[in-house]
Image (cartoon, rainbow, N blue to C red; front, side, top):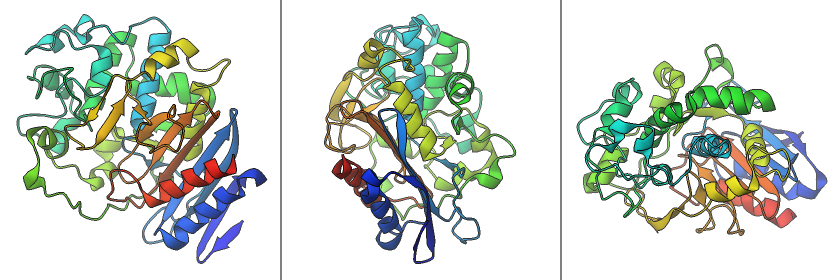
Length: 374
């Protein structure tokens, strides 16, 4: 163990990645880290598994190896993995219309929207267009309400980040394709068989080991300047960090944003996804799942995004120097991704949320240290 001021850095890190341990410790000293975990796999083996700091802002609970935390949109990479597994089993193809499985989805000109387009945020359903409350995001009728809605733009012509709504739509479509919800599928087909500490939602009785999120500073973007797409995605209702710590959120099946887990579990899921043998999917299916669906300036995020079928591709370098890397980031700073060319995966979870959409200083330092160690 290495003490950095009042913070203890614990866990394992092979000597090749000593720079990573240094970068992880430096985040507490220089980047206002509170509590975090970071994990790296190389060739399918865990080579870094670090944790440190505090699970609560009052600093009464140490961040342990089994501390879980809500990872927001980093959950979307697991959501995309579920779809890839279903595709690998021949249950659907990414170019099939959603309406083949969900006839009501065809309403208001959406009959030709494909599964791949929906997963890559092209369906024009980035949120509700009539007033909505936080409880309404999680109620049983939310998916039907979105499916009946007219798209905010011509589907297939642009992407607009479906920040929460992709989880509402995605788990309903998945249930119609596979028979189980995303939450159930993750438990029974990924986390359970692999022995990994990741769940959609937070199981009852696990609150004691869940880190408390610290909301980010106020966004520099004035909501009064939001477009209709941004209002639907981020402002109806306004996205609130504290919502993630309510019993209703933790009980929900919202695979766009309420995944809870450890960095080790997330890195291990990606390691099994890209495994050359006995992986979660075949190489051919992985290629389809990570192929570009659209690359454009996203109508909600306002930055260029390169979307695959639920994964974010690495055109911007957010996942390091390898263009073939893919994964997903989460609000506040968490991330998980795979670099199949280098045979590495990595994941970062934390509780002090940053306001930046990308280029979190903590994440950049950790990713840079990993690649410097290869």
